Image (cartoon, rainbow, N blue to C red; front, top):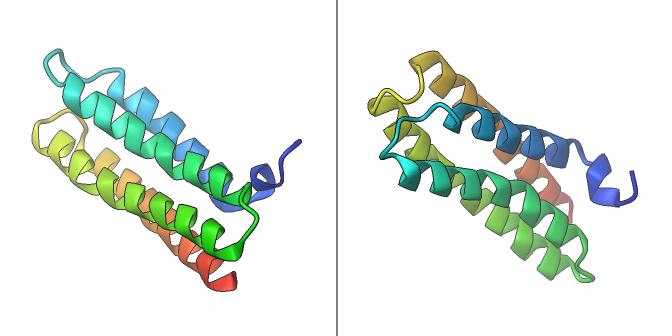
Length: 115
């Protein structure tokens, strides 16, 4: 791995989450492109902001981007809920994805506190 952020477990979990979202949204019915697009963008933003924050030189800049990452986690929650309500994902898939988000959020909180 060439970049230090790639060794972070939280980054690895975030990129795995984004990949899982891509897989889930492939089967969404036509007419739900707005959810597919927003959920894919928000999920990728979690990992992207971890990576971008890692490239910053100051601790406040790093914390800022990790905060953006946490915001993207929060953004995914209502999108997943709507997908569950509309039947695009099953309740057990919804619960699994929320648990993954909660774990990533806890790890990010620890990383932010360590700065």
